[in-house]
Length: 402
Image 1: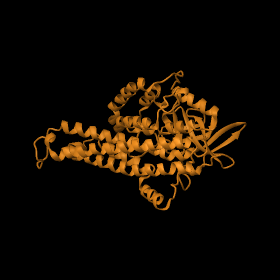
Image 2: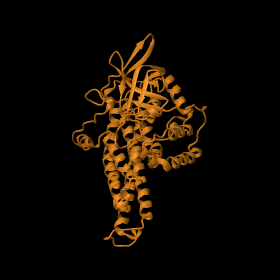
Image 3: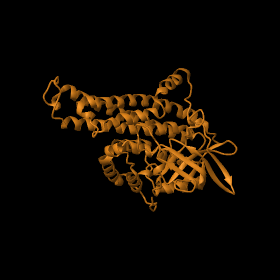
Image 4: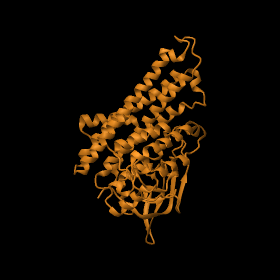
């Protein structure tokens, strides 16, 4: 995509256009997922409108919004199509790190690029090794030029990106991030994500074969700041789940209003007067309220934690508690959204399972998001922190910050 000139942005001015784009995205979401048609045009439109610059400081052509506002808007986008906030997860994660990089030149260069419309993908996780933090992708100096060689998986959003943030290890064994041109030499992006949910996120393989590191493409976060990232990336998933919850509510309402037949055992001839059906819709709507409030609460918590860290707080004191609170929200949110994904079939009866509705995508997508940063471990993480004071282990601890 072509970078636009640096402009002064106003969220009040541009928000209506974002929402018009959300409406266009929503109109084709169910069919795109049913046909596995990747939303290249939709993602391009968002970046051209400035959506990728939400967290970029105003001096670099962004909006400089709070995390609370960012996650509110990601939830709205997730309501339109839950694939797209996840596609943007690596992009917004990169923005957070760049906002807090120790290299002022790299910070200004890349935040300016993003302010003009550049999109980032993510290449961090690998299938090799014993743990998700293990990295074998290397950066080496070849004839005075740094190049990257290795293979990544779960490289969400990279097919849609201009640049890729790559987690690498150097010759000294030090872990760091570098930036590579997504369409440059030595980069192969493969659409081989085969999950049953979040099918359009391009969360597959990216290969690097002596791929050159971009100019000013070496950077590292301020010491301690990566402690923020596990909470941030989880919140992107939680905002996406909030969008799914809202979509389920809206689909349930439309479904009941459209029904003309009911069951032999129904207490009313009209589904719109059937207290069992109405009760199912009411429970789905209740789950939306729970989920929305939890996302906003932990987003505000992270905003406050970042302020304490920026004011000189110790990351080891600031970030573990907010991670634990976000983990608790994760458990409750996933339970609520999966409950709604089941109840929509109570609201709709046998006709709700027809393939053209594609209502099963809500459960598949929510279940897939629950398996990323697996929720099964989070109750133990919370209990160990509360009872024993054990700080949560995160991928951030794998990086040596100097």
